Amino acid sequence: MINESLHTDLSICRGDFFVKSGKQNYRIGKLLKGVLRGYTINNDGEEITTHFFIEGDLISGNYIPNIPATMNLQALEDCLISATNYKEVFSHVNTDTDLTNVILSNFQKLNKQNHSRIEALIAGDAMTKYKWFLNEYPNLLNRIPHYHIANFLGMTPTQLSRTRKTFSQQM
Image (tube, rainbow, N blue to C red; front, side, top):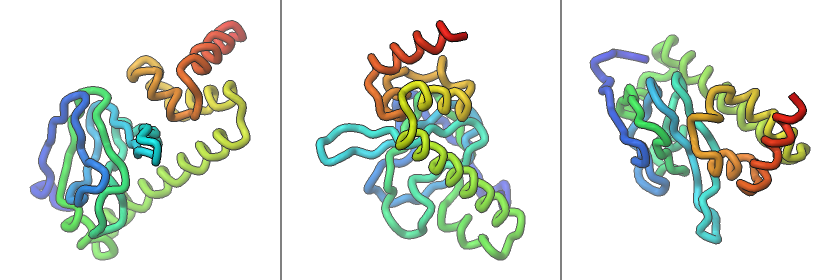
C-alpha cells in the first residue's frame, strides 16, 4: 500500500477484536499472520459467521468511508496485521494507481468469495457446502474451531461432523 511509514504492525491475541460492529471504523489492514473471522449478530442475539480472513487478505469492518463497522472482526489465532488509518488510505484511492489496484483486487476477491458462498449455501446440501469450504479455504480446517466452520456453512456442528465422516469414508 502507499507509504510504508503510514503502516503499523499490530498484534492481536486470539479472541481479541480488530474491529467491533457499530464502532467507528478507523483502521484497515493486511493480515500478515493468523486467521480472523467476520461475524454479525442476528435479531435473536446469535453470532453468524460471514467471513474468514487469512494471510494476505485486506481487512476492514466495512469498505464504505465514514460509517460504523458493519461486522465484528475477531482473531481466531494470534494475528499480526499491517494496519493503517482508513481515511488516509482512501484519500489516496484514484490518485495512486498501485493502491487503487490493490483495493480493487481485494474487493473483487471478496465479492467472488461472497458470491460462491451464497451459491453453495442456497443450492448445496451439506456435502456440497463442505466441499466448497475445503476448496475455498484449504488450510483452515485444522486451524479454527469446527463450530465456526459449521456456523459459516449454515449447519450445526453435528451436521458438520457427520458430513466430515461421510466425506472421509468416500475418499
